[in-house]
Length: 134
Image 1 (tube, rainbow, N blue to C red):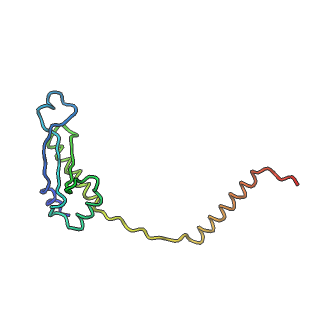
Image 2: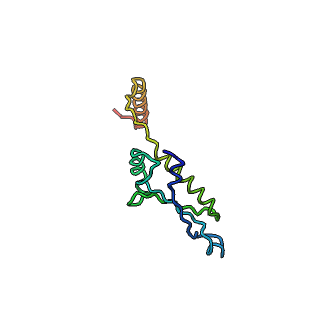
Image 3: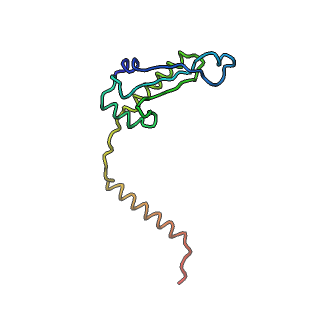
C-alpha cells in the first residue's frame, strides 16, 4: 500500500458537530467526515482490495466506500488529523494476513502426565466416598 497516494485519495467534509461548545457549536463545522473509495483506489492492489472488502465488510457501504467520522476535538484541523490516523491504522491492521496454524500432536511425556494426573484425581475422589461395609 502506498500511504501518500492513499491519503491523496481521501475526501473530507466538515459537518456541524454535536456536544459541548455553547453558542459556538451552532456556527462552526468541526466534525470531519472522511470517505475513501475502496473500489476505485490506485493506492491498493487488487489482492489488498479483496482482503479489505472481506475484513471491513461491516464498515463499508454497498458501493465499497469507507466512511469515518471524527468529532473528538473542537478544532476541525485536529479532527482531520485524527481521522487520517484512524484510517491509516484501520487499513494497516486489516492488511495483515494471519499465519496459518500448524496442527501438532501432544508429546508422549505430556500424554503420560495427563494420564497420571487423571489417575491421581480419580484416587482422590474415591477417598472422599464413604467406606464400604462388608
